[in-house]
Length: 73
Picture 1: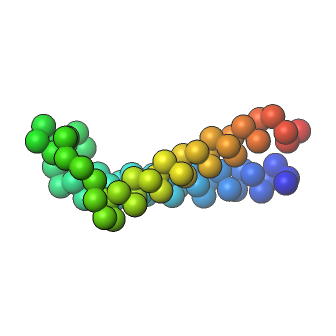
Picture 2: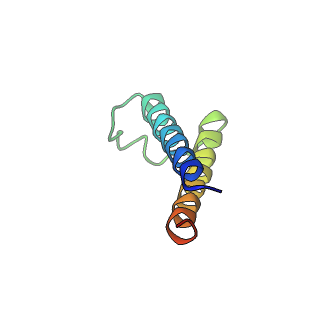
């Protein structure tokens, strides 16, 4: 994999992470910091899927970063 391909993949993954995080914050309806009562509820359905997908994308991003630093010269 070339350096350009890894860089493009990193940009795409980072934009996806930003978009999904913004969707999650907007879906809570109480602003960026949330309310005290909403902090301790369980995630269900689409919210749980988005949460897990966010974790997956962050792991992919970290993996791409490691590949970019370690193996591509």
